[in-house]
Image (cartoon, rainbow, N blue to C red; front, side, top):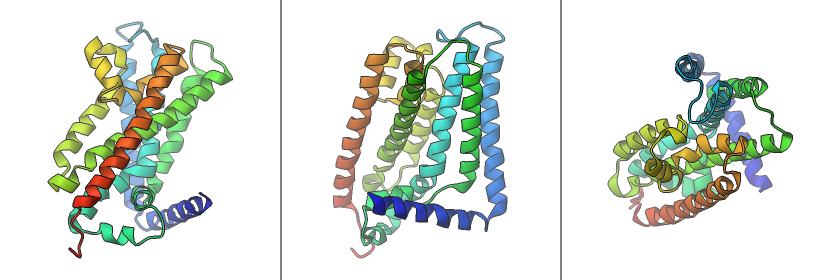
Length: 262
């Protein structure tokens, strides 16, 4: 475990050095993500000019929900997004061979090697937005509620990573993940809205079969104490199930993988 932590810190250090060589891209992505945050907060500001509540939440509660999924997105963009973007190309070119030669887990090496330094700045901004939203929350909360919320947000990060990785795994068989990736990105947009605005049947699907509601809505609902027991069990159970499914699909994919030497 310590060996993997030391290796990860090496990845982060190398990424910082590389980011400073492409400063225009560094600042451009910061501006782009900041605009994304402003649009999402602005959207709900406009909505609450016409209604006092949304899915049972007032404006301050909705801001906590927004801050939560912005934080999850920022963590994902910082730690995983660049690596997942390169994954299909590595499969199609046969470049996975180089990763199999490393004395560490190939899946670990593939998914965390590139640390997005420019997104780290936006991660700090997302943390600031969450602190601001919590400070202006209209309902009281305790330390236990906050700890549960942060743990649930960590699970939300895991669910987003697992879902995207599973979508990309089809490249082993189809040699292109573009279509499925577009579906995934559109499903992610559903997670940026409170799940209770959707019809009951659709909400059930988003909590279980296509669990995108676990990314944003469920952490917020756990924080506010809504159906907390069932939602925690659902969040943990789905995350474990997705992890096992990813491990299974990864192994099956490697069986059909056409390496550069084949």
